[in-house]
Amino acid sequence: MSSTNVSPPSSLPAGEAGLHVAILLTTYNGARFLDEQLSSIAQQTHRQWTLYISDDGSSDSTLVIIKRFQQRLGSDRVRLLHGPRIGFAQNFLSLVRNPEIEADFFSFCDQDDVWFPDKLQRAITRIACTSAKSPAVYCSRTRLIDEGGSFIGHSPLFARAPSFKNALVQSLAGANTMVLNKAARTLLATVPPTAPVVSHDWLCYLLVSGCGGHVFYDAEPTLNYRQHGGNLIGSNNSMRDRLTRVRMMFGGTFREWTEKNLTALRTCAGLLDERSGVALARFEAARDANLLRRLYLLKKAGVYRQTGFGTVGLIIAASIRRI
Image (tube, rainbow, N blue to C red):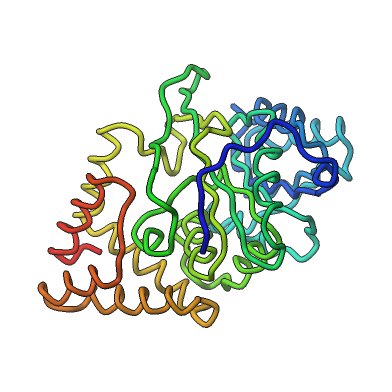
């Protein structure tokens, strides 16, 4: 797997301008912020896109807003679908698995963010440099805003290289920043609907990195990530957020997440490259070994988190069987 930090150029080469993007947006009672997000999509400098919206049973004015936007841009540009109503991750994955959605690239989209105008352009410029046969995903930091749109900070800056060994114990970036190529989309679609999914962004990171693909992490934000009471998963930017996650780790939530990720990985274990397969086997064996054996196998597996604080937490959690 290859990885890098990226700073894409400000304009797309002529050959890349025609590449088509399927924007995969899921909605559920998102009327409060949806108009602003849709406006930011309409203002993208990369013009070749189709917006697919999977609504999971909204009871507010979400559908009214969507249909108004659809009338403005046309039903060929904005397509409304019905979600499976079994959680946000499966709603996104229902779009990933939909064979009627075809494009060169696929971009996840949340209902309450605000995209920077060059979000798609920057991602495509980077991913287009790789072979279309190799899975590739672009992701980035985010600029954090409060409910009223005021700046409150940035998501953590990660300096260590993306890898499967990191993905086993940490999700690198939010799905709202991710853009996938066709090969990555096909890979993600192999996970059956019955597999447990913690989050589609973490699953994507695991699969692309584990199958020898390319993960491009951009240190520059590509969107405003709105923090509010309705966030299912918030940003990890403050000490309070990090301490909350430490409590979740020691309380058993992290071990539960790990088990779900491993179950999902087993459904497509044959697609992992050799190095990832070895790391996965050692990591799985470590979880049920005695203390000394556990720590030895974790070291051999090479798993790591992006920060020193996170790595210390990982070691402590491993010591008390919380991974």
